[in-house]
Length: 248
Image (cartoon, rainbow, N blue to C red; front, side, top):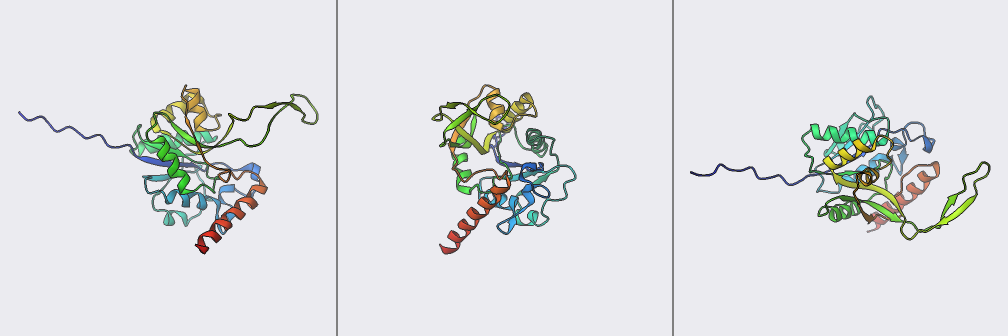
């Protein structure tokens, strides 16, 4: 008797997830900073453009706050591989976790990879995203883009009054965490559930679960637009890239 055919396991897919439910209060902008104009486009459009140039991604999910009315109306037409989930939470970690649950409801598998990226890191490049995927696909844990610390690191004395130095820290093993951060959907969801809503990035949650994510060099330009002066720097860099592209 012939054996019944067995189902061939599907290869894990790769998703991007961009939490975009925050208000960005430190940026001192009118409305969420991710919707502010930057080099002729909303800030988040520059971010989405980089992910749109990575063919390996199944889709990019943007997690918005329930009732969000500020998301630029033209973006769904420009990025057909973009999905919108109105399930943002009160914290970044909660927005990411809600987004992972939303993805699972859409049919994503717990073994699928998810790249979580800050909407305000608008200088990310497709090459950096591809480099992270290449480095993590064969790893059992996953990893994150990061930038090795170049400046001398000081510890502040715990006292009232003007801040004063309490000591200098060794910097050779210090890295600035960036995004994207790439982990398996199921493992990341479990880690975030255990870590709670105050954890500030996905790697921290995975570390609390006893895992050691890979560190992949991201570069100094992959910074998060956070303060008012960051907008001018990001705009200058974006314009320089556009000038270089036009000249080539």
